Amino acid sequence: MSQRPFNFSAGPATIPQEVLHMAAAEMLDWHGTGMGVMEMSHRGKAFMAIHAQAVADLRELLAIPENFRVLFMQGGGLAQNAIVPLNLSRGGTVDLVVTGAWSQKSYKEAGKYAQVNLAASAQASGFTTLPSPNTWQLSKEAAYVHVCSNETIHGVEFHELPDLQALGSTAPLVIDFSSQVTSRPVDWSRVGLAFGGAQKNIGPAGLTLVVVREDLLGHAMAVCPSAFDYTLVAEHDSMYNTPPTYGIYLAGLIFQWVKQQTETLADGTVLRGVAAMELRNKTKAELLYSYLDSSDFYSNKVAKDCRSRMNLPFFLADESRNEAFLSGAQAHGLLQLKGHKSLGGMRASLYNAMPLAGVQALVAYMQDFERSHA
Image (cartoon, rainbow, N blue to C red; front, side, top):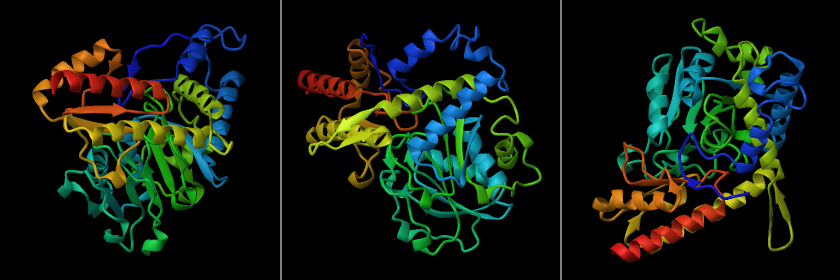
């Protein structure tokens, strides 16, 4: 299989090449049905089988407990910033922890439907740190506590989810894991609801994943649109309205790809699925961070204890060389490295589908660029 350029986009992001080949092979005729998946009725037997397999594979990959429902929705993580409070807040108080651009959006949006308590913020550090959970100012009456477990723009990540019970809170934890899902295990004992857009680790834009504990269903506000009511979506097995069928199909192929991934430890232990992806992602991130830390030519500003494995922002000491860096990177088949417009600099997103070879090629190019411009 020929090597394509390495795509470091933060999303829509790179998709495993094997998955793209499979989708191409099945584009005109899925398993002898005479139809492509995009042409199928979402209520037909063929697509229902695709949907059921995708749900089953995701449950296996993330070890999702039986008392959680898996919902496939639309609108992306941004829409969930409204849909979550519409379903869970009951118009009362919710706690928000602001750790970057995406949780800032969550904070602002939730304020339209609930009383929002800013439990903690990392804004004073320029979102280069995470506020320690034992410093959070949580509300006793909060309907839920919302965190973004990985901030795609600022490159900070919770490497351990907060234990709200240990903090004295009985509220469920809501996590936006858009850029983290399937890259590492989830401790469901600490989570009430997790949501994420698919376009980073599990497929194309258009599909939104929600994993919600069953006891949190049934509390939607009267003004909640019916298509966004988790209870209705769950009761109809994500078929209340026509779901993003092709996105579900491609996510299902990616789930199967992740299940097939393995990594072998020094003692011979074989890791599979998400555990293998976590080790691989650690290795990729450590390679790039190690080089950044060794260089005065480049820098990463995020505190080492909360650096993201998925999204690595970095800066050239002399930013007048940014365009030359990006032009040279593209010439070397290293794509989409320009940082978010709100932050500047560069950003390398190392999602599951980014191979180690891509990070090695990036580091080699950065070394060459540094030698020729230092």
